[in-house]
Length: 433
Figure (cartoon, rainbow, N blue to C red):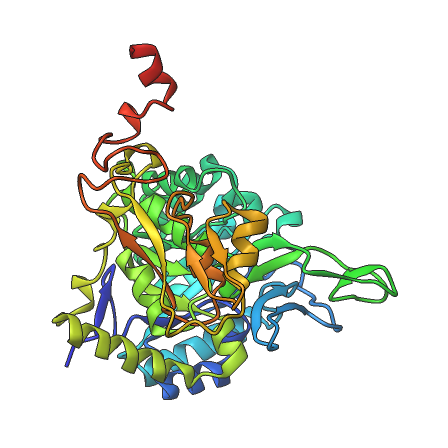
């Protein structure tokens, strides 16, 4: 069987599935249950300094976006960092690490942006025996208004400065958690690397308002008639997270910087996708909050079976496999031409492909009087919309045209253009002519 053991920046764990810093990792009771369920590691919910106490709201803390079947697609969270005393957290961390020495235990930290505050808390967490620290530069609500969280993560100079302090005053491996609430995710990652970070983790939550109550006219969750923006997470943010992970993995300035992937990981397949794009492990929150800690068992068995089928013996073999295939649009092969094909035996004649294509795409699907649907190749641009909206998996597919085959839509033989740089629609190519 595939060995799922991971060694992430020197932190060993029996599998690559960690719980992210969040409500599920707020106390010893939860973390012990998580380890018993099989999680390879946890990032303890963010600790703060012993300054003014953190006071969380006592009303609803989560808003949600549901799918049509009530499946949770995304959660908006307005909870702050831990409101439990620092000494209590540190004592519990030490106890858990002592009893589970083979599991990864990383402490998330967020304190005011001054050197003494970081020096003090690092001195205190050193004694717990934890495996590393994660710097929370991502939280977009509550703490950002106090000059912490994403307020730091949006300023590369601050990221570099604080990371240097952490590396100066601590022997522990340092992971910098990045905010997605920024224009170019590569800039903060570069700053973390300059500061000496051992790794980055991303993405933290996305600033959001998930819904508005149309009776009270207040954002939800609502606290005494008022609402606020919060952090959005869950399956809905996965595409954003995958792109940001890939950008860091393939950038020349950050290539080789270890990545812990976060954002909507719900299944083993999600985890494998993050790892293929360069993540050395993954962190999970929403899936655990939705289905409970034992969901990790399905992730473990699924990833193990997939790796066996691929002939992989370690997770390191999977990490980064997809990175060379991520490119910029201008380098895509314009000789590659496909056309939609409908499997008439599988078709249930619902007409969804016809309606979508006729109303919103290229009018490339014909409907006969007996509701038989067929593709008009001379109109099909292979946009894939029909495949995406079809309710029958595999009913519609894309056929690749062979080199030299005539594309009825354009009248050109496949193989005319090498890529965008030679395409007649490219202004540069037009100027050269």
